[in-house]
Length: 170
Image (cartoon, rainbow, N blue to C red):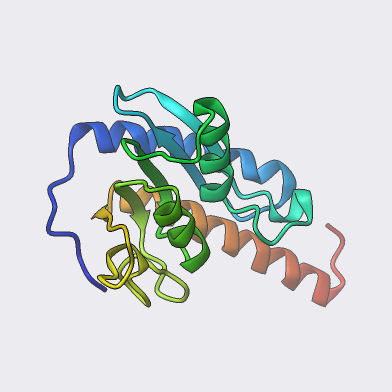
């Protein structure tokens, strides 16, 4: 993993709180609890998203994509050049690419994704020098809280699967 040399601010911690709240909304639909917000230059949240792949039956309905879409609609522009994307899990290749295409200059994330991360672990799309836009990455913000959401979610899923395999009543 490429750890962020950039200092994390109090604002990053506060914004991650909003992303964590959004992640909680995914629980109602059995989606993986990942949340994201796009924050404007004044610190106001312009777009909020959470995983909705199961709810919408859409493989692209990741939290980051939902937040970026909402911010673009609110701004009436796809260019989010002065915004910050804050997400509870390291963005995948699709979400990192969407961030680059939206010209978002800063990404703040919580937990690392050692299997599919594209912001410094498996890949580093956000800082790929051959692309036309580069992004500052602030990693590990409230990492333990963000990781716990995922750990708890998958532990509960495994427990449900075990119950079904054994045929125990729920």
